[in-house]
Amino acid sequence: MEKRGELYAGKAKSVYLTDDPDYLILRYRNDTSAFDGEKVEQLDRKGEVNNKFSAFIMQKLEEAGVPTHHAGLLSAEESRVKKLDMFPIECVVRNIAAGSICKRLGVEEGIDLNPPTFEFFLKNDELHDPMINEFHIRSFGWAGSEAVEKMKELTFKVNDILTQLFAAVGLLLVDYKLEFGRCKGEILLGDEFTPDGCRLWDAETRKKLDKDRFRQGMGGVVEAYEEVARRLGVDLS
Image (cartoon, rainbow, N blue to C red; front, side, top):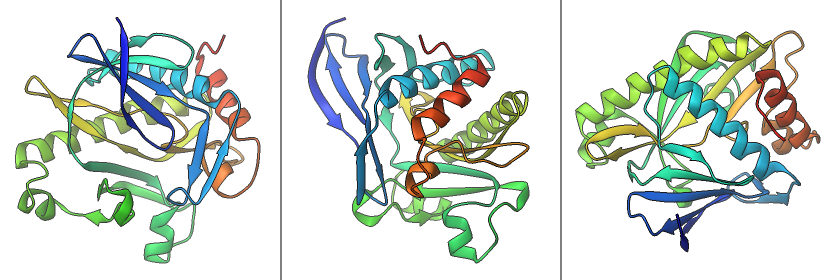
């Protein structure tokens, strides 16, 4: 597969066209940002760790019946993915209160949420990804009712699969966000799953092993990602 021009560059990933119109190349960079790009740094090995981490998770999800865009690793920092028509929506599940929900609702970090909460956000950096609901989604035509229900169904299915996967290695899946797209009529998970886009805590100590280490200036960001990967059995060689 031949890599062609850059289609899109996000905060930490770049997407490239290929000679196959049905596939793209996703490159994970070492760039790390927080607070809508106000804090930006380069962290050695991060792109490679996230690429291999996400590939491992996508394989686990596919094996459990969640359709994804992932189509294989190409190199240390690149993966082959299916080209999707993306919905401009982020689906967020929270199993434990942390991050923005604590600030919005004035609740203490660390409260177990039973049942887990589900939130929609509009993917729009200029507007700081505002929270939206199903009526907004349908009224503005961002997705139809069937697609909304499918995204919710798949997001909770991912939660069931991954909470068990992480629990088996002594980790708590605190929260995460997912994005979806359509490919030939089918709705697929069209996102990464890495410690950049979720919160993971050690189950015993509640030590943070995710991007909050960067947001909060705790250091050891990539080392924490690598620790999670090693616990799961991700091959980082």
